[in-house]
Structure formats: C-alpha cells, structure tokens
Image (cartoon, rainbow, N blue to C red):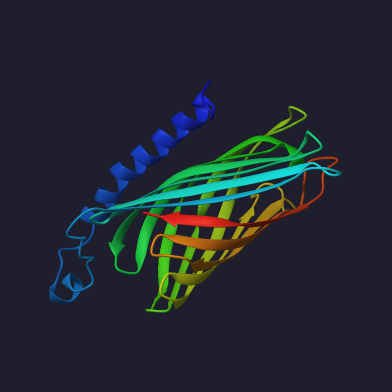
Length: 262
C-alpha cells in the first residue's frame, strides 16, 4: 500500500510539470539582455550538486512507566544550473503504556527556478497527517516567489510569499477545500564550522474564512560531533487558530538526536 494517496502523488507531478513549462516562458518574455542586465543573470553551477541530511531521535522507558518516542526526518536537495529541487519527510511517533499517543507525518516535494541572483519562482506540494490534532490528511499545492534577502558568510535570510490550494479531511470525515495565502521566513546563523542556529516561521491564512489561519515555526540548534555527524535540538510549534472540533489549537514538539549529513 502506498504511503500517500494516489491523488496526492498526481498533484505533485502536475504542479512540478506546470512550473517546468511556465518558468522558461517567463524568461523568454524578458527584453534582450543589455550590458547591465547580463550582470544580474544567475550563473549556473558548473556541476550538479546533491546533499542529504537525516535526523534520528529515540526515547524509551520501562518499569513503572512504559513510554517510547521516535522522531525521524530527512531532506534531499539537488541543484542543477538555475534549478533547485527538494524532498522532505518528517515523522513523530509515540506510545504510552502500549497505547499510541502521537502520530505525525509531514512530507513534501518542491522546485525552485532562480531567474535572478536574489529571486526565484517556487512550487511544490505538501502532505500532512496528524490524527491527534484531528487531521486525517491534508494536501497543499503552492506557487510563489523566494527572495534571498541576506546572503552573508554567517547569516542567511530567505523570504517566501505566494498562494496555495488546500484539501483537508478531518478524522470525522468532513472535507474542507479552500485557497490560502502563504508567507514564510527562513533564517540561518552560522556559529562555527558545521554549527548553526536555524529559525523558520510560516503563516498560512485561509482566504475564504478570516479566522482560519495556521502558523508553523521551528527553532533548531546543531552542534557538530564530526564532519558528517552532529547533535540536533529542535522545537516545533504548530498553531491552528480554528482547529478541528474537540481538539486544541497548539501542538509543541521538542526533539533531540543525531543528524547525519552526506
């Protein structure tokens, strides 16, 4: 059985295909480059580059209390010329005395096309499942722009803005499909070689219902143990101003474990 619905995989393929067709047309519509505009065109990387990062954490107790929690995450990034492709996956699962008390899954695919050194077109699709927050499944397809506001040796800041389509089904079987806006910020502070602090914030307002909006944030600190291995501490907050009936609005997740980079 496939982990994701066939409709989700079909949306991923459709969104990425549309972007691949539209981005080159947008570039050809520009005026012929002059001596000034040539300097602003992004120089593609000489060779394709691929990076893979995975996180793993596990806690288990036995005796008077039996609790187990596992968190796994991975990110695959491939850059090729003006293109950047990304695939992500995150899982948090927990049991208390043999009874499931946490089961969160989030996955996504995305692509960016940089037509200027500081701006790129971005598109992708996300899949989300969190039954303990009342969400049986949620898929989102987004399209927007990414602005590289700051690119310094120690500091990196990206701002994202755009729109998305959301298809959501609650654990009660009620479906809710709606368009949404999306704004996000991604900040990384390099502390030393392979050590850094990362902060992300994402705001997703429902364009049909004013009081329905979500805010997701992540704070992470990574400290190296070796060239490829590090300790990672993360704190995630997921806020839904209009949660499913009978569920709380905020989930907080603290994780710690190993991070391996390739």
